[in-house]
Image (tube, rainbow, N blue to C red):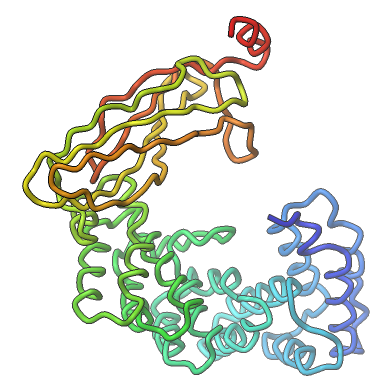
Length: 377
């Protein structure tokens, strides 16, 4: 992932200053120019907020005044796209909320749609959704019929319950299914870009409303498009990892009577930064083929000594009657920025169609134990 200064750095901020200066020559843009030197050390969101606030400080007029400047900048000779759009759309949203009129709100929604192809307005629109979800949703629903693929994607991406990098919209979380009509309109969209957003939105919903998600996916599969099954698989991915019976059955992974031997570990003491290698055999003793979703669960040790399971995809396979297969995997404990590994007891288990085996224990060494462990082997 790019660093914050690669997305909203001084070059981006300078382009914003130049574009606004040409669109509003009567303003000194003191705050925006000062913000150029204040970006260091800030997160991406903090940089966007800093430029948003500076823009609002330098353009103190009414909502209409600010929107006029933004639209003038958008049609000006200076490039007006990329990450500078985030603070711009955020300023428009905040100004419309402060104006607190229907006209300003509706026009701000129009600006979101106008600018979203320059950089997605999915982050800025969240403020408008929080301010008046009931007014926003009919407009969003209209976007689902837009000829512009970026506007259609904004409809589903901007309303995601757990959109990464974005603020939450409590009103969406509190009203289960309120965004499903948007997804209903887009799940057969011609664009993979839009369909992937629909799948991610569906996966977001599965955190809190798994049964609603399964029912929605089942309804889509009854009237599918060419890519609906693929979309549903992606949208149900978290439920499948968690072994949700309805999601598994909808995807064809019915409860199966299989015999599992394992997982068998190559070694039960793993050096810090090392690799856990394991294998297992899966046998279908029944008279019918069994379609299997085979995952594995690593029970990571937490700082307090408790264990927390995380499921990883392994394979899918149809096992013929009487057939036996062997699965194997190497799982790395190389240090990464998104997870901290704590030494001590861990465990690993196999998960087949949502049912897990008994976990098998292993120990992860602390870094300074690695040398002595290596001497022993």
